[in-house]
Image 1 (tube, rainbow, N blue to C red):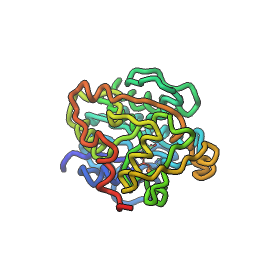
Image 2 (image 1 turned 90 degrees about the horizontal axis):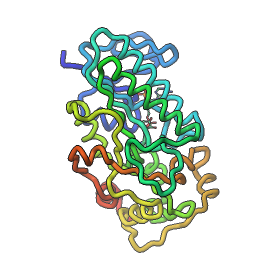
Image 3 (image 1 turned 135 degrees about the horizontal axis):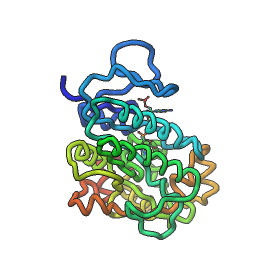
Length: 292
Ligand SMILES: NC(=O)c1ccc[n+]([C@@H]2O[C@H](COP(=O)([O-])OP(=O)(O)OC[C@H]3O[C@@H](n4cnc5c(N)ncnc54)[C@H](OP(=O)(O)O)[C@@H]3O)[C@@H](O)[C@H]2O)c1
């Protein structure tokens, strides 16, 4: 048997992309009896996993546009706690636990430039993301390398937000939202896949890594880049006040996703010499979009 790369959240947008890129084994949730690994998220019991397990990847969580508040983070927090406990309780442990976290661990940060060791946010959602990161990092105590990928919005048409914004994007309507000056961390899907693969094999990748493109943008610049990518470089876009955006995307956590300002720098990856495959938003997204 080749070693198992066990993937939680395999049916999700990022889980599917990771499974298409790497030979993973899906950890199925709340299934009845039958072959294959199973996971009861009620009890935390995991069984039927083919041995040996080389790595565990957790891409499980609430949808990106899930309702605001703690409900947006509780499923991934619980999943991380259960997986970390399962790893710790095993006789033969995997060598690495890769966890998907979020820039939302910072809450609202204004203009501050945020490295991996900058303090997290104080609001309850930011604190819950920090608890998730702590749960993932706890496997280091039992000799398992933890890699915590703090993601910005993953920019790929099949993924969450861009999918939902499809019509506005196609018609060149995306504009500054809530003033548009807030920093909006983003990352290309290719970099998510490349860094996930590197994290499997390279001991020097450990702890929290900011997985955001190095050229960070304010939301208004992000919208302009997306208009350009969709073939509408001269359209001004439609400015939306925060209240209108909240109504348009209700009940999603619009403040947490799009209105709070977080200027993340991928310091650890740059220090390791990582070269981003998709450093620029227009070039990352344009080949994937139908032209307007
Ligand atoms: N997409 C982004 O831009 C982005 C950015 C930053 C952070 N993240 C984080 O990365 C993770 C994956 O994102 P995604 O966009 O792939 O999300 P997604 O499409 O919503 O997929 C998440 C997957 O998690 C599993 N899941 C759902 N509810 C669960 C529950 N209550 N307990 C355990 N597992 C549950 C499901 O997979 P199964 O049915 O196969 O179990 C689901 O398909 C999430 O935690 C998200 O917050 C994503």
